[in-house]
Image (cartoon, rainbow, N blue to C red):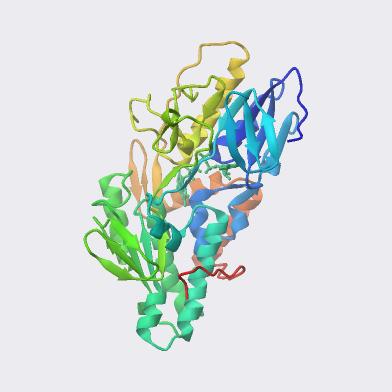
Amino acid sequence: MNIPKKENLKRVIIIGAGFSGIQIAKKLRRDKFQIVLIDKNNYHTFQPLLYQVATAGLEPDSIAHSIRNIIRKKDNFFFRLANVYSINTTKQKVYTNLGNLYYDYLVISTGSVTNYFGNKNIESHSIPMKSIPEALNLRSIILQNFESASLKKHIEEKKKIMTFVIVGGGPTGVELSGSLAEMKKYVLPNDYTDLKQEYMNIHLLQASSRLLDGMSNSSANQALKNLRELGVIVWLNCLVKDYDGKVISTINNRKIETYNVIWAAGVKGSVIKGFLKKDIERDRILVNNNLRTIRYENIFAVGDIALMKEDDRYPNGHPMTAQPAIQQGNYLVRYLNKILDYKNNIKPFKYKNLGIMATIGRNKAVCDFPLFKVKGFLAWIIWMSVHLMSLVGFRNKTIALTNWIIQYFNYHKSVCLIIRPFKKKNTI
Ligand SMILES: Cc1cc2nc3c(=O)[nH]c(=O)nc-3n(C[C@H](O)[C@H](O)[C@H](O)COP(=O)(O)OP(=O)(O)OC[C@H]3O[C@@H](n4cnc5c(N)ncnc54)[C@H](O)[C@@H]3O)c2cc1C
């Protein structure tokens, strides 16, 4: 890969421009390091709002931001649009589709991928929602299915096409089912007058006995109540066994006929080849409390991909959410900046839980903060404000806010467009 090496600067390669990697690339000192940021996309994705792209609430470019544009300080900084395949820890090189590159320090911030828990049937037949292209696929599938159902004669056939099963009752599953329920309530009567609302069924399957496992019981119960009020059929204690593209079955022998299973049941670390088996646990790279990998002095991992077990409060690792990723990114900036000053007074990383929240459709959300909990309209306002503030760039914030205000008053999803028709093997 063509990047000139400067003798007086140590080269840091950062793989992944997500929540953690972007912090590091933005803030690392340019007088000490040459920074090379590599990502397979040329944009940063704000994943918490992917479900709004999938359900026609936001355009994809409201939740994406050009990486080259985010990094304002360009001195000693290089971005490369490339897919990293592997690393060689002895030669200190990363291997990509554009060639290889030497590093002095390496930061792995590759995030996570959808976890199908080894079930190939589910992997090939269900619909994931982990990236912008996948969210756009889902949007096309939903709208194409409405179009297709309009053409069917028999009600049973319409219902099968319009039955959506979401697997996973975490924040993603809850938010997506709430948003789909709103499409049923507001988009169908406006845009598809020949389709009755009762043809569309939304099922949410959750393996455990409650929704929103990482949140308080009261928030979980509130979310359940709100979803049921919206008409979502929630199945608890319902572990999925298989899906053949037509029928989804659970271990307690429940069967639902559907062409549309949306998989929101989990993620696993996006590990890059080159590590020993011992360095990886549960598909995450083991790190010490300085986020340094256990075997290699000059390799660090942050965000979803990192598994730090030395924080007493999180013996199984930090949650795979945005806050730990951002905080770890910021910590590593301080750590790396100090490394070259030969300062050893660096405290271990401590995750500060700032709270967790989920929205359940219009006017409703639940927020668990360390000292108090909020639900209902106020929680929804907090949820919107936090997400708006967290979106990257003034343009994205403005467009998202404008869309939300318009939708709030006209009850309509802004972007019910099949721009890129999607054809999956199991769709009609
Ligand atoms: C649908 C969805 C909803 C979510 N909702 C919430 C929420 O409400 N609240 C919350 O806190 N968290 C939420 N999360 C989780 C949150 O988005 C992640 O925890 C966070 O993005 C992790 O940050 P990261 O820096 O580890 O990785 P990411 O932000 O995932 O970034 C990883 C980057 O690495 C790049 N990459 C990966 N592999 C390679 C490779 N081999 N070569 C080159 N580039 C590579 C990717 O393109 C990507 O840009 C959600 C996640 C999803 C999928």
